[in-house]
Length: 419
Image (tube, rainbow, N blue to C red; front, side, top):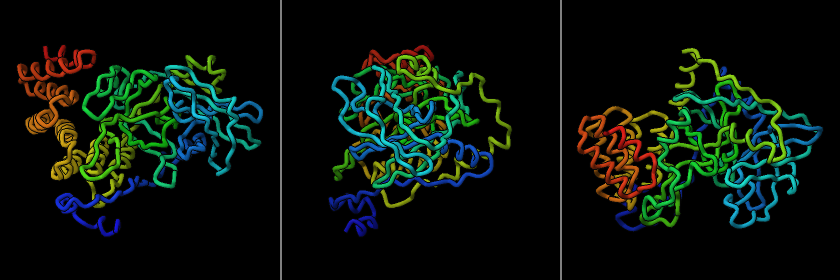
């Protein structure tokens, strides 16, 4: 029956209140060649999968070797839920899966965490010879190309993935993230993730999935510049489906290597290889090869629910494929989901990124009309008015956002720009 429903047009399913089939998210693989292929091979050598007895998994990166003991750096929430230390860690056991397909148990006493930062180190013992990562500690610049690696959880499988994107400088990243260091709810359903607590200070556009948490964020030389941990999300629940999915609308977030290095002693560990030189400027040929690889990512085209169109639109937006992203958000809007404000918001992002400011204004206005307390849309509406030189309207929009979230520092930054 699910197979049959999968062939039916979504608006027909919605009209007749039929169950919406649960289509598992697929991530297309782009076979990388040349220097990108070499970079991926290098990343695979240092990345491990961390399997939990709870059935979930995460990723990690080998940062040291002493005798037969290897140290793996990962995100704390991979080996301890919850990371907020209100309750003790769940009593799960963990296994490390290395690049050669071998599994090693994690000795529970070796799991070390530090309160307030979503980082952990774990150890395993092996007579095999595995590569140790080089960490790179330097300030990132806007739009530098970067990569994420790890083992996303997709249904029963957890295959290797290597994704490409661009990173923001720390300052710009903190201003562009929609989830800042405040706890008010931005909409009835979505609790805002607290990105600046937990050490999340890296913001980048590569597409990441659950299971890649704890995996490395790499620079164009294959050095580890951060640990991936989460994506910005908003809850988007399809009208007649009971899956409570959080849709990733926005960027991915990670913890910079500098944060780990500052804590290394307290975590009773030392990284073996650390460099502080920034990456050299990439030549045009290399930039071209990255852009081609990013643009050739196949974003699945199956028959889809509104929330899947939303996620697809966001992926296309992150891949800078704006016209396709706009189409995907329009498909979500057609289905008139409860979270239609998110679809208008995504459409506004894609239109704004392609410089179509009047159309972006219309989309953001629809978003705040559908959900008057959705702060990110008021914030973006203000900046698009500002770019269009409609300053009175820009000021009114940002004042509305501040009224809703008086503790959000990013909103005052937008107001400063308007003034």
